[in-house]
Amino acid sequence: MLKTKKTILITGATGFIGSNLSRRLLENKDNYLICVDNNSSGNISNLKDVLDNPRVEFIEHDIVKPFKINEKIDEIYNLACPASPVFYQGQNAIQTTKTCVYGAINMLEIARDNNAKILQSSTSEVYGNPLEHPQNEKYFGNVNSCGVRACYDEGKRCAESLFFDYNRIYNTKVKVVRIFNTYGPFMDKNDGRVVSNFICQALSGSDITVYGDGSQTRSFCYIDDLVEGLIKAMQSDDNIKGPINLGNPDEYTIKDFAEIIIKKINPNLKIIYKTLPLDDPIKRKPDITLARDVLCWEPKVSLFEGLDRTIEYFAN
Ligand code: UDP
Image (cartoon, rainbow, N blue to C red; front, top):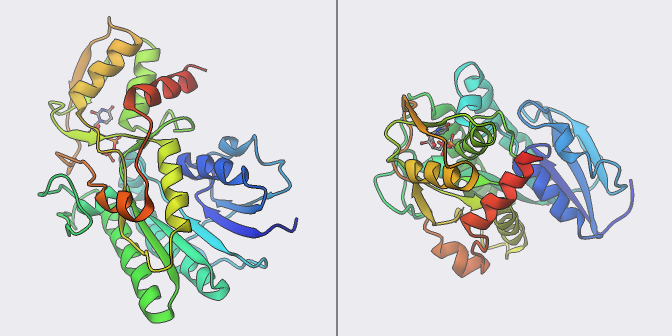
């Protein structure tokens, strides 16, 4: 192993967020990365441009199983978990909860052994179908604990509780961030998320599939902004534990979002309406006052600019 100033463990490293974060962290020559993934929803090709770097080590491992690591770890970004509703539900539901809960315990144990800082990628899904708008970190949420999304929502909620209990009981240095809808290069074109679906449908000349009447809202954050937020959260003072919302408050209805994509890519396309998935949240928009105050962070990339870069990525 190459000697550097800092050793950083990233779980979910071959996923969309993990691969972008890895690339960004490697820009700092002081960082050595241990990238972990079982490649179930991530893809090793997302890291192909950095795997040869002597400051990168890749370990194929499912974080549901305990994990021994010989190097001294300084920081852990725990990102591993399928994040797309079509991927985390159904036949994968139990594995999703295990990834959230056992994965959190296994990574928290590594943090405890190493006296390392550990960041948990929590989610706007902890707010469920929110009755408060926009969502502020003090809101406790409205999750259907028996529903099809509960494996992810409740799994992530349980992971948050584990993080704060490790902090209270063992003084583990924790950071919990709640990530809202994020998009950009290295999204999986087949994972069924709205941004990748709409862009890929439009690029291939297919009609755009809006679920429900399209009046539900989402607020989209460009990946580079999110990655900056993750790094700022990790570098923040130890007394800043979160939870902290990270997202872009720029809110759109899904129908308006479809029209933006149609206008940008192919104005001849039509919208077709399909059934709204069960428990699909009606509204979502982050209140990022806390991130602005304690991390001095806010998104910089507009939806139009971010979409141009993402469309270019998918077109190539
Ligand atoms: N959606 C849609 N058409 C698609 C994919 C998604 O209308 O082809 C809707 C989905 O029902 C949800 C929103 O877009 O209301 C965002 O879905 P996504 O799966 O990207 O993320 P979520 O925020 O639901 O986790």
